[in-house]
Image 1 (cartoon, rainbow, N blue to C red):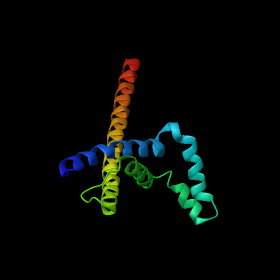
Image 2 (image 1 turned 30 degrees about the vertical axis):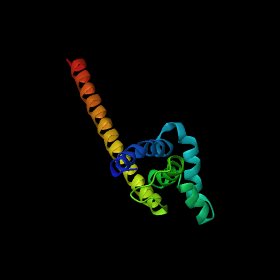
Image 3 (image 1 turned 90 degrees about the vertical axis):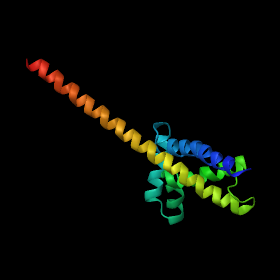
Image 4 (image 1 turned 180 degrees about the horizontal axis):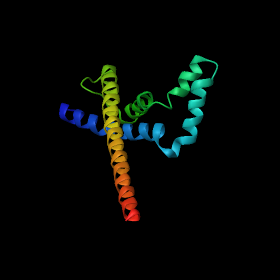
Length: 132
């Protein structure tokens, strides 16, 4: 695969990795299993068990495992055609996926802030109308 194709694959493969990692670690659909994992990550007796459960609560940690699955599924290598290409691809995909998740988190935060500001303006307007 030529370098341009490898770079395109890098940016494209990072999207589903980010989506899966974010969904499992943040969205409502996985809330119950995530809360179960959070409890175990805080209160289990062994450090190995606590760390294993923590992996399902942290988007950065979880993205490593999703990346490994995608590397196996897609046989994607970056720059080198041997095992070193898998390592480069893996860390590059984790990095890009986390950049995407950071942008998504900032976007969601900005949208929530705008909604709150709009709601406050609407409430102030409604209160002014009622007082007049």
